[in-house]
Amino acid sequence: MKKLYTIVLLALSFNALSQITDRDFTSPEDTVRSGKSNEFYNFNVALPEDGELQCEWSILTDADLEEFNVEYSSNAIDFENCTIIKGSTDYSSTRNFHVTLKAPPEGTWYFRLKHTSDDGQVSYSQIISKVLSTATSVVTVYPNPSPAGFINLEILTKDLSGNPIINIIGRSGRTIFSSHIRSETFQHSLELEKGYYFLVITESNGNLITKKIIVN
Image (cartoon, rainbow, N blue to C red; front, side, top):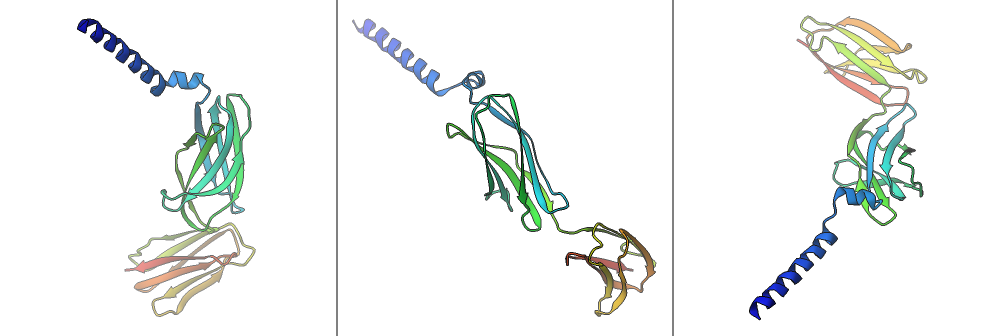
């Protein structure tokens, strides 16, 4: 009798373990067959000249799509929602999405994509970082530091509508050199005495670009 009771307990235990295993542990193949798989790829954020963010992504899925949230953060930890894009019931294998957003202030920003499926499941894309700037000019000063007092300036400017200006200011606050930038490529060479200087460019949009110049 004791032996039969032990066999019954073992059978019941095995049956319970089988039920737990079937319920709690699902293989990736089972997930795909159930229609709940999704995979982000090609998520990208680009900043064109008009100051608007262009967000693009694709998703490979066989599940219904409820919505997407484009989120951003200044520290890659605390994310805020930029916009919500509603999905659709479409069982094609690949879907492409595009949305235009107003750019946040200058600085380094982190972006990710949040996807909520029709059954409430949430998944995220990889996090990407972008350095946003309103500067329309690229400034090169060489050599810097200068060992002999001669420096070369090269400024590439995209926007000449507001008549941008370049100034070189000494430590005393006196302006050593000043000129309007009248072409998209500005080049100039000059000789400076030993000391520290500041190159200041006032762009057409009012943005200021500063660089420190050292003459040994």
